[in-house]
Image (cartoon, rainbow, N blue to C red; front, side, top):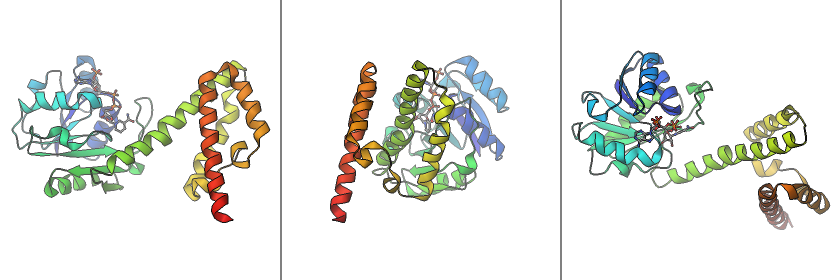
Amino acid sequence: MKIVLIGAGNVGYHLGQRLVEVGHQVVQVFSRTTTKAVRLARLLESSPVDILNSVIWTADIYIIAVKDDAIREVAEKLSQRLPQRALVVHTSGSTPISVFEGLFDNYGLLYPLQTFSVARIADFTSIPIFVAGNIDENRDTLFHFAETLSPNVYHIEEEKRPYLHLTAVMVNNFTNHLYTIASDILKDKNIPKEAILPLIQETAKKVLFHEPEDVQTGPAARGDEKVIEKHLSLLSTFPEAQEIYKHLSASIKERKNKLNGSHN
Ligand SMILES: NC(=O)c1ccc[n+]([C@@H]2O[C@H](COP(=O)([O-])OP(=O)(O)OC[C@H]3O[C@@H](n4cnc5c(N)ncnc54)[C@H](OP(=O)(O)O)[C@@H]3O)[C@@H](O)[C@H]2O)c1
């Protein structure tokens, strides 16, 4: 397929490389920041563009990987340049495909559910890709296209997708925020971060084999109130973390109580 990649951020960087790796041709890379367009285009043996009006109109798929709030604006500008029949997709978990409504006849979604950073390697052979299309034909085209990028391709209904994205934020962004808080506390007390890394790994591994609820441990799950009070007092100099600790402990306790109630 001939692809125009719009956006040279984290997703553009990794998706672009995967496209080339499996044999697609990234004919152009657009970024409003010229240096970024040039850098990624060089890596993909492609042509850089920094003006949407210079995007070629003969590509098979236009992939928009820009910040969510800019998708509509970019699509509007593109629609002034491209034929209405062009197939245009975005890569956002949280933006409905109706963002393209009225601009193009053929549009959809190509959402790789993984956390991408330029500094990390992305292994697409283990990254699920979710697709959607405004009509069945586009959905099927995107499904087959996505299958060239990953062995794990799923169709996701538009009404279900917000829940998928919501849970992705919880398990990835929120968990990572807790790592950040933990790291701050360890730094403050001069304890090496490495001390908790095996625990992070084991916690993540456990859910591969068990229901998360079944392997919940810790003072809140046990009902060890004195330990909880102690922790809250230790967190008095970290008021934001104290609030989070309180809320999460209360939620764990409530869940445990419900579970115990249902077993009685
Ligand atoms: N990162 C992830 O883990 C991940 C995973 C799955 C899906 N996604 C989705 O993929 C999309 C891109 O995410 P990302 O992580 O690659 O973002 P990113 O690294 O922050 O890159 C965003 C890109 O959007 C461009 N941009 C921002 N505002 C723009 C505008 N008004 N006009 C034109 N370009 C604009 C930026 O250009 P400049 O560099 O010039 O500012 C940059 O190239 C988002 O929809 C996101 O939800 C992200």
